[in-house]
Image 1 (cartoon, rainbow, N blue to C red):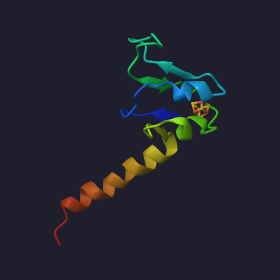
Image 2 (tube, rainbow, N blue to C red):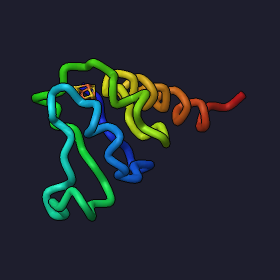
Image 3 (cartoon, helix red, strand yellow):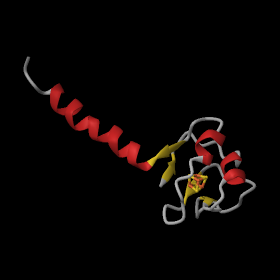
Length: 84
Ligand code: SF4
């Protein structure tokens, strides 16, 4: 699945291209006209990547790649405390 990060400006470019109709405003701000952040339903996303190129601010990321990026920090954190 793909995920929308905090860079989201909610301009709905992604909503317009999503073939699975799985991008929604957050639950506590459910109005499509005024929401400031959008989210992708991971149970409906078909990994087509259409939203990735549609997003004007690069706010959409592959969930698998996010995990990869964060896992790099296991070593980054550990190396900080290692004596040279
Ligand atoms: Fe929709 Fe495709 Fe983006 Fe998934 S990857 S949210 S199906 S546009």
